[in-house]
Image 1 (cartoon, rainbow, N blue to C red):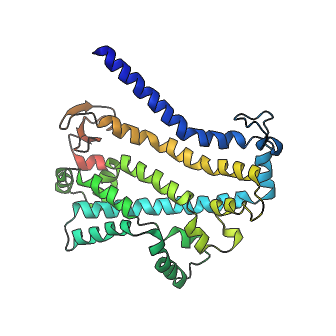
Image 2 (cartoon, rainbow, N blue to C red):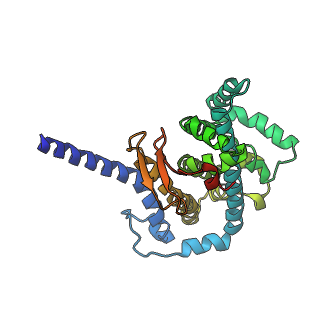
Image 3 (cartoon, rainbow, N blue to C red):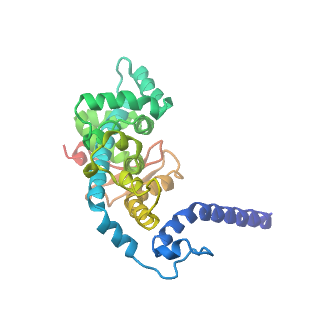
Length: 314
């Protein structure tokens, strides 16, 4: 029996390794090919590793094209849009999950139903609104339209629904204001899902191509994806520059993922804990005895056992 399990485990590991290689190989080929000189890129037989590695492609990318400007435009759009998206979606998700008001469920269903509409259907009215507001050919025309995403509101609402109402009631009894409850209590609890939404939002805005193509007409305001698309001409393609620019565009997304992956992994690891278990923790509350409460979403939160409001620093 154990031998059969070992065989299944080995086969499963081999399949996972094969699937990983299938997904990583195109990225690996792009990265390695970006270091190949022009005459080696299309040489036959095709080789994976460059024979005469060079960084000339990257140097030419920054010398021939103003990629620092495109990089700056994309960075401004992505970071600003991501911050506003996190703020609006987190507050909206909290309101839909923890407050009762007339038409709440109907409004949430209306938000959620927009995910079933194709992007092409929404583009025309959105472009009209952007044009009427004077945001055409402006970076704000890229930033503002996608900040309230139905996907983000749905993720935040579902996460906040799993947080017990008793935690909020305890804070209200101790005199905490709604603003303090949200920013000092609920936001730290939702750190794993906020990290997930940060990665998604950053990736969506960084790789966005269609909407900037419609809104931006001035080359000085191009984002990185628009600049890369211009490298593909009608009759010729600068493959060396295209590959090096594509590698450069992947780096920020990878960095953001590496920064926020710890919170996602911690949330997955804590999912194995039993609900209702309490573990004493003495090192997170400035010397105050704390208890780690495993919420129904199985995300751990350290709360002082003495007075919740004092720890929230009202």
